[in-house]
Length: 106
Image (tube, rainbow, N blue to C red; front, side):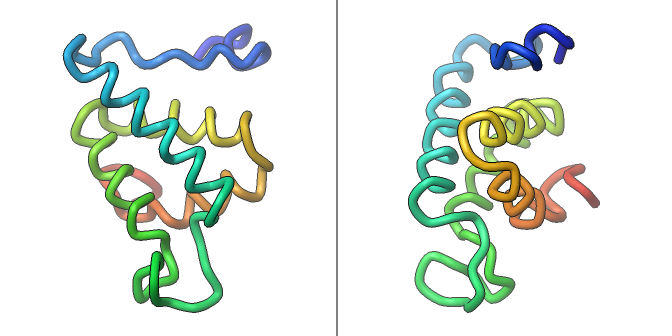
């Protein structure tokens, strides 16, 4: 991510992503932002939308798919978009929800 794209919020998908998967990646990132707005990525208690570690189940599934599509670089783009659309602490919740997915904080 370049300094200008980071500064002005134009965080683009990595160039190496297959053209056929770009729309899927964009839709997954949009869904991730909606999850952050509505439910958050962490909970104080497991159950319902959250697994035994209190991580949002769907957010983890999205993280795994983003890792399959574009690896750590795509996950970082998604995290940056979450940070820009939502509060910083919500993005940090995503950091913890994605622990041990691909190379994310592992």
